Amino acid sequence: MNNIKNDILGAWSSVHGCLEKKLPGHAIHAWFDPIVPIGFRNNSFLLEVPNQFFLEWIESHYKDDLFMALEETYGEKIKYKFLISKEKGQKNMERPSQNVAVETKSRKFNNLNLKYTFKNFIVGSNNEFAKTASESVANNPGEQNFNPLIIYGGVGLGKTHLMHAIGNQALKNNNDLNIVNITSEQFTLDFVNSLRKNKTIEFAQNYRSSDILLIDDIQFFRGKEQTQEQFFHTFNVLHQSGKQIVLTADKFPGEMKGLQSRLLSRFQSGLSVDVQPPNFEVRVAILLEKAEQNGLSLDYSTIEFIARHIKNNVRELEGTIIRLLAKSSLLNIEINNQLVAEVVRERVGGRIGNEVSIENIVKKVSEVSQVKESDIVGKSRKMEIAEARQISMYLCRDIMGTSLNNIGMFFGGRDHTTVMHALKTVNEKKANNVRMEKVITSIRKELGFSFL
Ligand code: ADP
Ligand code: MG
Image (cartoon, rainbow, N blue to C red; front, side, top):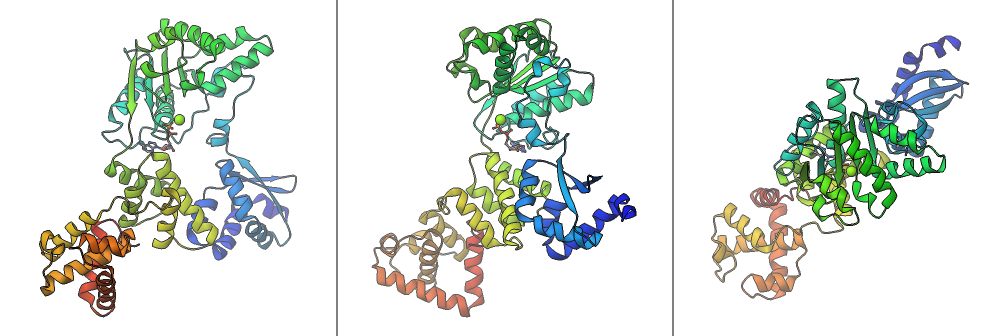
């Protein structure tokens, strides 16, 4: 027993083996591969996990499996305990660092998320300038006119990512740099705590000793006059001594409300860069990257389907991938088209198909069938024309759920029984006719609905 307790890696590989027998591959990959076995303490097997979310997920979904695998390995009941990885712990990063004012070296609370790098930041016309400016600042902090650098834009578009990437890259270039990375709320909290404890001098020193000061989401300074005043002084001290300041905000500084004008005018001396929502191609690239990061292999039509529907921001794209992973783990099934459609539907609230219009469908059918669009919506009863029309009607109903009446109206003012007949005909032909099936599949694919 003691021997086996000493061979932690061997034991973990056996536990892993037992789990592999019970759980689907993607669940193992997503939740168990990243675990690092640490050792035994107080008769508990210590396991390091990347973050709090991980810990909670495993606790709520795989607790029994884990217990059983441990028991199988050791031949007796064994307890386990999770530790959250210090380096990468997202939760650590988010926790307000209380009492930082009394800590002497601010490096202790730089809390940079190592996941956020320039390398894994996907560039498109929507964020190219912001990334270039950020990289330049990371490589020459304080040396150019980009001081402060302000990255602004909507939610989930990569502002925090870029800011952390600046910190990570600058540290890579020079490990001695003192990087202070904090959200505006943490800054406020630290300041308030320093007031309570009569440590405002330490507070000020702490921030003013930084080589690079990164403050996230400065819009939350809104209306906090005293905090803004502190920030103003810190800003001036750093700026005058050529230290780099990087800020993020939800709006262009000139449009920010509730911030003192002397601050806003300071901001103008630097560079403001914006991040915009990604276009379709960038969304596809991001999804491919995030799927790979999460060990998911999705085929291209799935990626494209998600990219067509999830459009607002990158966080949602990422969330969709995580949700897919979570759902397939939870339901214990491999990822299939139905699951993808379900997850996307949950996110867009049934708005699937909004992109597609009757006109679009007719256009595609016309391309594929070589029947003119005007004929498809016209009166002709010629066989190939009638068939193209029926297929168009079928797709309108199937993809968009358009009412029979509306379909009839659009296609040459026919009544709903004609439409019903068309749908029935297509269904029958589809079942017996490979060519028909192929045509419909290819049109669906072109419209981005290959698997609904
Ligand atoms: P913001 O701070 O603008 O609200 P974040 O930086 O937190 O947004 O980004 C949300 C998520 O999306 C993060 O996980 C981030 O890594 C990811 N992300 C955003 N933009 C990109 C991009 N261009 N390439 C790769 N990942 C991105
Ligand atoms: Mg952010």
